[in-house]
Length: 507
Image 1 (cartoon, rainbow, N blue to C red):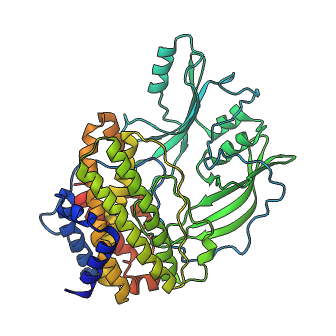
Image 2: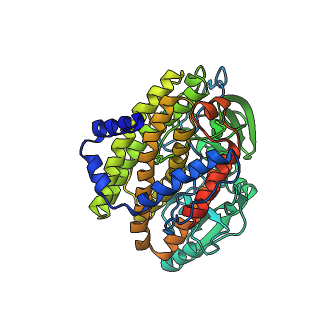
Image 3: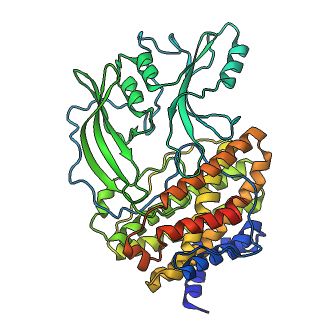
C-alpha cells in the first residue's frame, strides 16, 4: 500500500472509528461521480500547464439547485501580506451599537422628526437586496425591525402590498463575474401606507439629523462599504459634528485586497468623512475554500501570522476553516435530523464532522512547521433555521465551495513539491470529495420539497456563489504556494472552476 494511502487509512481509523464504515457503505450518488471527475480535472490542469482544462467524457452533475444567502461568499484566504503596525486611536469611544455579538442595522433608528417605530413614525422597516435575475424572485431581507402593518386599518391589504412591493431603483451592488446585478432599498409601513426609500440621499433625509449612534451606524453601513465588528468593545462616540464610529472595510480574498479599520465620522446631516485608517490585513491572492458555518468570525488578530511565510499563513487559515467546519457539520446533522432526513445523510454529516477534526490537526501542524499560528474559530450561537435557510447555506458552502475546494485539494495532492503536504492533501482531497457529494445529496433530497419560489431563490444564489468564487481566483498565489503547496496559478484555477461548472455545478 502506498505511504499516502497508509497515512489516510490510519487517520480515518483514529479520528472516526466505525463512523468511516457507515460513510463508506452509504450509496452516495454524487460522491461516486465526483470521485471520478475531480481527480481528472485536477490532472488535466497539471498536464496542461495552464492551458485549457480537458473535460472527461461521461461525467455530469446533478441539476438540483444550490445557493446561499445574499451575503458575499469570499473564501477564507491566507494572510500572505503584512498588517499595520498600530491600530486607529479610539479615545473616548463609549457607546456600543451592537446587540451582543450582532449588529442589527435597523434597530433603534429614528426618523427626522425624532419618532421611531413601533410607537410612531413607522411600525416596520426592512432593508432589502434585490437581483435582476430571476426577475420575479423574492428580494432578500438583509435586516428588519418592528411589526409590519401593525397600525393599519386594513392589515391584510397592507401586508399584501408589502409582500408585493418591489423597486427597480436603489443603490447598486457590485456585480461580480457572471453574477446578476442587484441593488438595495428600504421599505417601511406607516398605518396603511407602504413606502420605499430608494437612494442614500433619501435615506439621509429620512433620518437626519443623525441624533443617536444607531442612526449614524445605519448611514455608515447601509451601502455595504463599511461594517461594524461586534466583539464587545465600544465602537461609537458623540462629537460636536455628529458621531464617530469604529468600522472595517474591504476583504482578504484576492491579490490587492485588504481589510482596513477606520474612524469614520457621520455628521448630523448624514455625511461621511474618514478620520483615521489603519491596515489590518492584506489579502491572500488565491483563497482557500470550504464549508463555513454562519456566524464565523475572522481570526481575532491576523497580525499574529505576519512573521510566517506564505505557506505557513495559508495553512493557518486553512486550519482555522477546517476547525470551523466541525461546527458547520454538527449543525448540518442537527438540521437534517430536525427535518426528518434519511439516516444515511445524518450519519454522513457526523462522519464529515470527524473528518474535519482530523483535517484541522493535520493542517495546523503544517502551518506551525512554516511559521504560521492557527487560531481557534469563534462561531456565534446558532438559532433554529428554516428548510430554505438550510438549503441556501448547504448549496453555497457545500455544493459550490466544498466541491471546488475538493478539486483544489486534488490539485495540491498531485502538484505539491513538499512530499508531506502532498500526502496530507491526498487524504484531505478524498474526504472533501465525500463532503461535496454529501452536499449535493442533501440538495437532491431537500430542494424538491421547497416551494417553487424558494427553489428559484436557491438557484439564483448558486449562480451568484459561483461568480463570486470565480472573481476571487483572478490573481496569482505566492510562488511558494504554487511550488511547495501545489496551489494552481490564477489562469489554471479559473479554467478548473469553469470546467467544473460546465460538467457538474451547472449540469
